[in-house]
Amino acid sequence: MCSVIVSLVIVSQAEAKTVSAIALFNDRAMLSVDGEKAKIVRSGTSHLGVKVISSNTTEAVIEVDGKRRTLSLNSTAVLGESLSVSPKSTASSIVLYENDVGFFESSGQVNGRAVRFLVDTGANIVVFNSLDATRLGLNYLAGEKSFASTASGVAPMYSLNVDSISVGGLTLNDIRVGVIEGSFPGIPLLGMTFLSRLDMNRSGQTMVLKKR
Image (cartoon, rainbow, N blue to C red; front, side, top):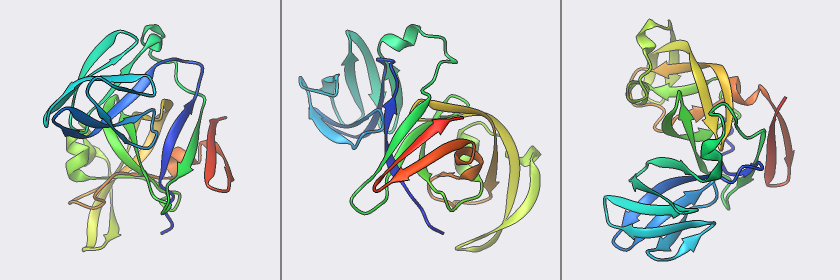
């Protein structure tokens, strides 16, 4: 299975910042802003318009345009002017950049709940393991049952539709997903039931995903 896993930059006129806490330390935090490559930011300094007010090993206080938010490890928050825009307003396109080895994780949401994806053009469906599905509030056992091959053998898989999936501020509705019983895949795969509904234009190490 060929995987293309990328970081994200939103192409949008909105001024909101999507900030994810990748790692937390005393007086510094590793943040990903709008899906860009994560960077360690020291307390009292800013990165891409996001200022770290304070940080310890459990939470960080960040500020964007005078608005503050507390982030815990692996959490994501949206701050900035576009918070006043209708919740249905989303980015129309995103630019994807490969890292040095061709793999990146991207932050996103499933039905409004934060998740991290591996963007995988080789997966024909968006895939979660059952532990992630439960955390995301998916009633997967009510889905259509089939079976999937994993590294540990054959496991039950349940197919169902979710209301929305967002990546980098780009949101699509009514997405078919699969949930595999057990711990595979270790990170949710953003497969073609999401990607095939977008125009994909790849040039070198970049790819633009655009709503049709």
